[in-house]
Image (cartoon, rainbow, N blue to C red; front, side, top):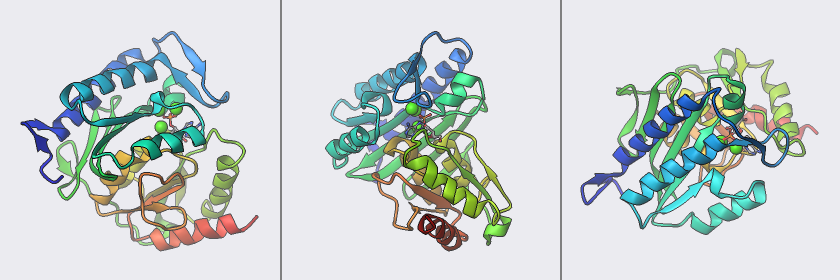
Length: 280
Ligand code: 2AM
Ligand code: CA
Ligand code: CA
Ligand code: CA
């Protein structure tokens, strides 16, 4: 998998091309799209732009690599059970593309300019290429396994903070008000007094990319899916950071509760999250 080229077509080039094309198109639709659907709950939105972006990315990828598998958010029924099943069906594929066509749909709908396109390629369950593209800032974050991570063509590395007290930490507030949101609120209550400050931008993939770039010290969120995290996880690993679940177990495609950081604060970070979860 290290040689990311088959028949002269580079996996990475296709990933970049898809993210850039989809991102440019999404940007033209900001404040200018027609259909808004509620997907699962009034907090869980989907637009024609999510669907159009996924269609564009899927057809480009399958044109180049017709034998590859594809997992995209909009091809999966809403809800955690269906997402887990969809991942289980394809996770061991030789080559699997994992795509979030718009990460930050709520922001997109409200005109809050913080959303992204996330595209990852996994080889037998291991992410080997990750691209997160922010069309509003024209920032493309790219990682290839074993080759580092880049933004604007410059090598990224995670931040240097050594303690929670000096950390800028992001989180996200799930649409799942039964399980994920209450658990997240416990984490927030525990962490907020211990860190320099908390941010919540509304795109998990961009929070991961920002952690890779050293703009955030770390990020945690409860109840995410493979397409929110796959590309960002490789960005962070290739930038010298650490990605685990909120119990500290190593990242894999099935992780839903994520904790990612510069590595230096990771033990302290996980400790605080575990303590929060234990306190009923
Ligand atoms: P989305 O915009 O692609 O749906 C914000 O907290 C993060 O949670 C975003 O990355 C968002 O991705 C994701 N998200 C939104 N609704 C969700 C849901 N119902 N279940 C799981 N993740 C969700
Ligand atoms: Ca969504
Ligand atoms: Ca998402
Ligand atoms: Ca999405």
